[in-house]
Length: 161
Image (cartoon, rainbow, N blue to C red; front, side, top):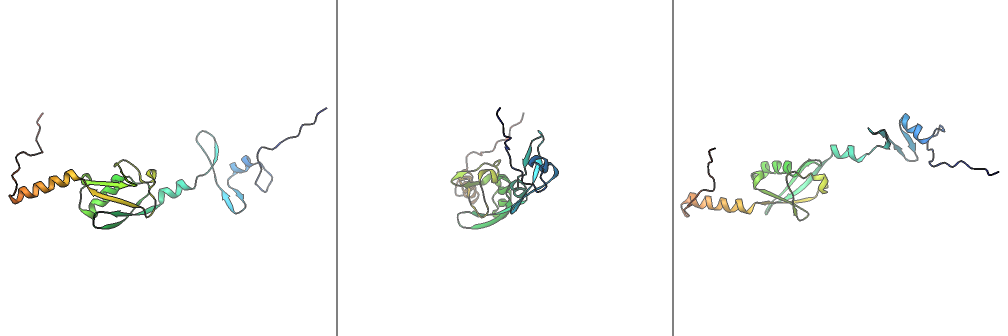
């Protein structure tokens, strides 16, 4: 006759001798040096609670925004979008959000992209440029206002439907 041994597939870390899952349902399980918090997901799965998700929602990061000649330190939530960053920069620089182009890690970022999803961390550098097409249009309008250049056609037309 063969004797079969019972093998444990998980180790119980609770001091009262209950299994790991039973101790987790009751609340927190303590390990050496730390505390593990558990949560019950909607599907019924018991998992370790994520700490980074709680911290990311409340954290405020400081960005160094560099224009051609100036630096600005902007404090913003990590879960904000680049569009929200443009709104804050419009108050600081005077450029409208449509006139701004933001570059992070060498790529122009769209308004709908989230800072934390792209990888923006505290004290990272973001470059701010004025859109060249709008810059050229402003120069032409300034020259036309001074009478140096005559503007033949307007780029804005009214359409009636």
